Amino acid sequence: MSSTDPHATHGFSTRAIHAGQSPDASTGAVIPPVHFSTTYAQDGVGGLRNGYEYTRGTNPTRDALQVQLAALEGGAHAFSFASGLAAEDALLRAVLRPGDHVLMGNDVYGGTHRLVRRVFGAWQIGLTTVELGDLEATREALETLKPRVLWLETPSNPMMKITDVTALAELARAVGALVVVDNTFATPYLQQPLALGADVVVHSTTKYLGGHSDVLGGALVMNDDALAEKVGFHQFAAGAVSGPLDAWLTTRGIKTLAVRMDRHSANAQAIAEAFVGHPAVARVYYPGLADHPGHALAARQMSGFGGMLSLDLVGGAAAARAFAEHLTVFTLAESLGGVESLVNYPSEMTHASVRGTELEVPDSIIRLSVGIEDAADLVADVRQALDRL
Ligand SMILES: *Cc1c(COP(=O)(O)O)cnc(C)c1O
Image (cartoon, rainbow, N blue to C red; front, top):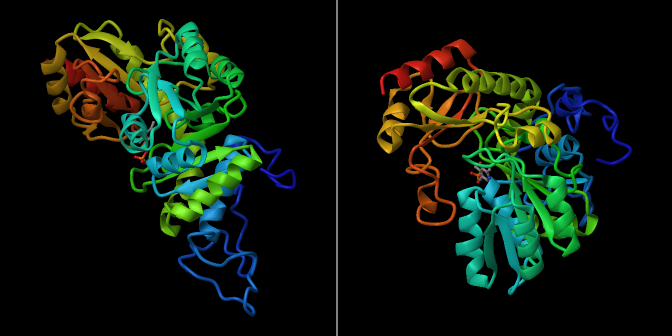
């Protein structure tokens, strides 16, 4: 965000609603128009109006989203892509060269692991995973491997592990590694990785930022000008940009992010507390519970505990599968972060691709993306599904 930004000193919700969203200069339309045009009239050859030439390079609707994203994460530069993985791909292309190594948490998003291992692996990029909660093991891996990138995700998926961004950023910086934080689960409303020492924030805006399960997208936010220039080049040269309507839908979703996250967090906390000690539940994984191993760290590093939680069911795989199928308010589906509650059975759905790897998820785990419906209805739905086991 530039120092001339009129919203630089405003609070989060004000920035979410106004950054990049000034009324249209020519008509006063309070909601800026969606610019579908792929090309822009030139006033004489090379006479571009405000630099607009071709939509893969720049588009006013995408620019507005990028300003909004930068303002939310407290970054100087933001880039919007067609999906979270497209954003990750552009970042990795911009920073990696053959022979480089990536060190990542042993519970990162499966698609991120697959991208580095199977796409970048073919270009001689090494990949190692580590338990990032173990700072000594991480320090050792950083010193031995000298990775170009340290990639982390907190809270993690689906075990809700919390890792210390500030401590890890310090360790990574000592060996010259770029610190990338996937902030999809927490969102900038609950956690601001750049302020905690990260170099780059990654988002699947498909999840909480879009917030309505109706638009795919991804984003990168950073402060470093030289890195931003490289990322901007890859966004333009490889072209995995978000389309204008997708960018606009994401912008609209972001305007309600703060109120949605408050409700997601309150509903998730209510469910977590309701089922601790239930005879069918071996364990509730939610950082908002006082006995969660990452609770104190999450309380320090985040301003709320978010809408994601996982249950470990006493009855193992059969119970987990039956429970997922018994829910009626929660919809059985992949993905997360929408206003509607979703249930996912990771070992056969989101995490099927990492079975047999170090990212494998136990088959007794159920993941809930808690929506913003009435908490009482959600608690009752979980209760009836558990009671039937
Ligand atoms: C969904 C997701 C991604 C990938 O984003 P897409 O928009 O599906 O490409 C990356 N990281 C996390 C944490 C995710 O949940």
